[in-house]
Image (tube, rainbow, N blue to C red):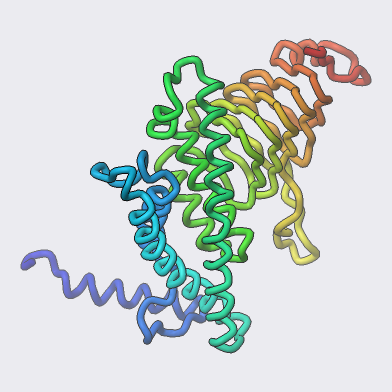
Length: 312
């Protein structure tokens, strides 16, 4: 590649990498890659999708009498790849809290074994999400259509797998899986979010669900909905406090329409309806309806008046 001064660029990039590693106090990765691979996780999640839904998300030439063989082979490959990635994350963490390699290996194997055991339950939960999408969208013609086509369903496949990794103390792998889904669908769900069955995200683009959000059964939300944090407490040193409950609790059978923003550790009561483009930072009682019009009317009332909500 004459004329592009590639050797000089290579030298400069090596220098920049060295500066970064020195600043981060990172040792040289002499033994090869020591950090999980986004590409490897993308491949194994595709394999797990096929194992969960072989006749819909598996290979196009698969026949039903070959399902078990395909699922067994695919799981074997995917779970061994996941074990490799789990080892990488746990060894990475052990840089800051050293412990015996045998202990790390045992934790990685136990985590992958537990992940595999959880897959039938994940499939059952996903079945409820698929049915919720079919029943909740008049434009859906079949459950197969929503499984194959709906970004909200795809996002939930990734989320339910990522959430299991998160629960098994593999948060970096979980976050990578969540961001793969974000890139594919435009739906940003933190893997720590707790989401019960029958969850339906309609359209989906721009949805954000934070780490400590808790969502009940049969909840439906639309595009551009945010379940976010209102404030970020800091410690005595001015550093953000992590892991505190800071996102909404959405109880069973709530509907949140497009563009609504719900912030803070508020509770949206069972069966409540939140209208489009509402900005909400207070609890909502069960069965209530909150609309933009109601919020605008509130602005004209004395400050002591409560937010008007009408039972549905």
